[in-house]
Length: 553
Image (cartoon, rainbow, N blue to C red; front, top):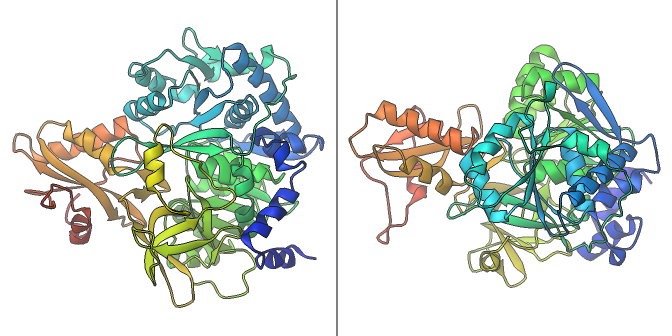
């Protein structure tokens, strides 16, 4: 039976049967324990030559890591974590990006029974400190490029931190008192007994922003690598010789799991690029490594497609998947025009997992701009705020599956309960069904801004802008980006003490410095007052609907 036939047959199964089949593909029963380090690495190490990761650097160099090598290095580092006093259940934070140390550190944490806590490297010191405090982190690993950022955040952190540093050239980035990651790996042996963890035990604490209050910490269990298998099998459809280019940052769930640990749990090979995003550099990596499948956000695809029209795309590329923000029909056509094959859309959350996608080997035409199918293993519906069925448009709700991406919010059980209506989990995202039966994303019910694949909570941005001299009030909403997708827009009510040009600069610079480049308002408008309800609640929909492109800079 071909892979296409196998997947089509599986799509006819009930959700329970899909999960039965996924469990049967493991090398031991779920009841015997499930640990992410074993699933994403150790079970493949007996094949000594099996490639797990190709690390491509901006200067053209590349490193090749087998599963056996990653297993050995992560066992050594797990011993270092144990020697530093970390114990099962402790949170271990990482300020790392697309680099081999990320893979070694998360595997070490999972095998030691720690809760891996990734931090996006684009955070400013305030945002970083807030998450370190919320997780009550005792230890952190940081790349030398972000060591000064950590030091700024450290002044706001409530407890002392054990710091492991990835040194740069000439030992750069190692502060007094730091422990060098590679020195620690060399210091300790590879004998480490991986903790026996249950499928439901916490593996990762990953923060995602909402519209109000502090960022939510999603508790993701060891079963997440299993819960993502149906999505990967039916969307990526990877086979033996495939090479996946993973463009997402591992500071977010999609980069850490969906194109990271879960892909490795299939025994496949990933390719990452350690440099900053640059379309021509990506094209070079795709060509040198003969990448067959690509995963990234629409913003990246737009720029890569534009560059490929001039420089060409590797002929090895057979397809790609998009995630992080809505995918428009024109981008699908542009990707096909450069010879990249089908650009498949997908949708998911850190809380729910990947739920909707344009699946591989579809037998019916896919309408660009919509998601054709529910991922096998899941049951979804459109509902209203009360959880009652909605007809053509409503909040996407997930019927409690056997394996869900998150089992709760860190220290916030009440907020987690608020997401449920009986056995249905409300994603907070509004969809409508099109004439072909596809699922079309309409918007975020909770006003979360999704820009360039990153989630931006308006409240965090607003609180920083409100601190600037001359600001009486402010609202942050999404606005159309002329380059495609959406961007962050701030509407400021000035108090008259500071000029508007100066207010624009201070608003942008303060958010960029404290939260990161992904969160600063590219569009800044001014108003005499903000639209609010009688009880004072901000009417963000009025601001979004009244926006006219080009009205402000």
